[in-house]
Image 1 (tube, rainbow, N blue to C red):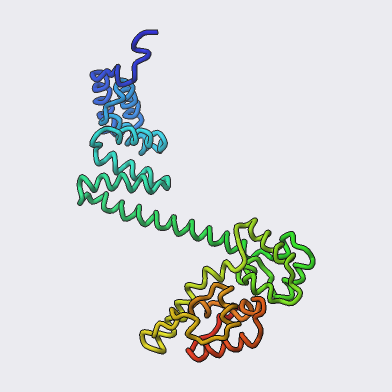
Image 2 (image 1 turned 30 degrees about the vertical axis):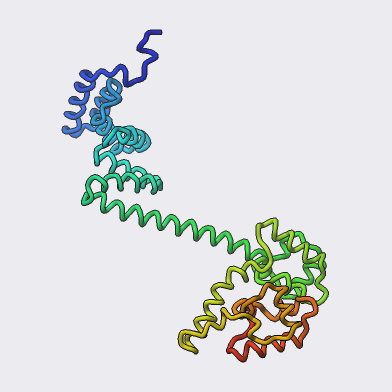
Length: 309
């Protein structure tokens, strides 16, 4: 094996031969013979792989001939040199965008704009790339939402639940997986004849799908709380901070306060996020305490949350 066989390609550049083939390729390109131009440029590239000008002409003509993969590889090679030409970066950006590689395309265009801020094609392409990225993100979110919605629409009868649990859910009018996410553990416990075994069975099934009881309620609480606050603002101007006040200001009985403590309710805002069923599911919480809380909330123009139909 000779010494040249083990040297990198850049160590045995034949620049004179490469220039001869490049000039021939340029003549063919100007004459409209793109195939002939590519043949000459390829010969020049073989003679001198480090000639950025020839590399670009070869990539450009291959690109126009539909050889997009080869063109992309060559554009990337051209862009590796210090201070690559703006045309290289623009064409590489277009190639990336065509393949949906928007971050790489954006990086190339921003490199052009860093050199020439008013470059017309770059300014146009950056808008297209950002819009395409936004559309891609929207499409991905929409697909995820559709997949999630399809999961939530799955009937609970499709899951491996005992007959007792299925019958209990049917009596509660809980038909789909989404319905289960709208109720809390306390609400389920409040239904007659719904035992711990059925509760654990449901919780295990949901956990296998990275879901939990009351999940929809929790994610919806902030929105509901804001709606309540907006209502107070419309009725009382800027509002009087009622939702942020402690539940102790409602002057509830000791029994009612203990029940709320078990639910982690500390403010009036927390309280209006709860439903009657959640409160009734707390041990030793009776109708007397429920009526008391409803009355106190009515006094300040509020009410407990109601489940969506």
